[in-house]
Image 1 (cartoon, helix red, strand yellow):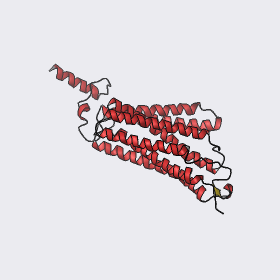
Image 2 (tube, one colour):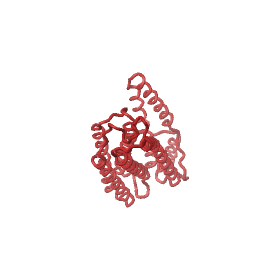
Image 3 (cartoon, helix red, strand yellow):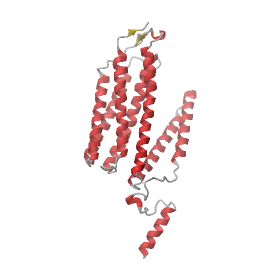
Image 4 (cartoon, one colour):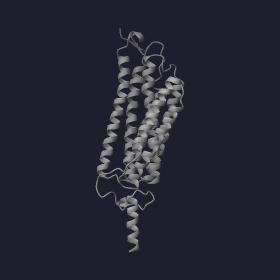
Length: 295
């Protein structure tokens, strides 16, 4: 009888919002219904404030050359991301609140996010092809413009392509290992993928430091750095994403039937791979010819 009373009091305390209370009964079996009713959270408001602080900081940086407010905004955004995603992981692993219907919503959300990223890169490819297919008088009606020394596509860019393609193979290896319940093997494959992502970023930094043209030296450098630079930024994000998945795999958060967090990272990484193939073909290979006159 006393145990029943104690359990009832613990459940009542948990319902009142005490974080130290005994977990509710559905922590082992999931919620009693297929939907996830999110508890009140401070992260949306804090995320909006952090994003606003970052935007104001960037404006101050551009006008007054003072980076401190922008750095504070960036740190605030990172803190919100860490806290918010920590809560999402807690909901999935501890509370078991991500049922089948919730996972469908998460999948649709990730797919729509990747679609928005596709359109983001379409803008850069549009600018590049407009300048290269229809060269203007400013470029001497030639592409690449005269005086621009482009990269040899089958030197460093080709090595970077091989690195990314190999990383796509290792992340697929990790996916198959997870689906078969081999978490140790999946963690090893993810570790290799993360190292390949870091290696690619190092190669790109090396490439940029050896470029013969600067960002503001014409339409070719501008489109080149915008397209490849934002791709490199996405590689860094994807590498961090996969590193978190590696840590979660080691901790045993993923099972053969439930590992959407990893699937989202794998989808994002394959998207990064495909964008690079288009960049290599269009920018490094086709766009780095000897120049074709378009009078």
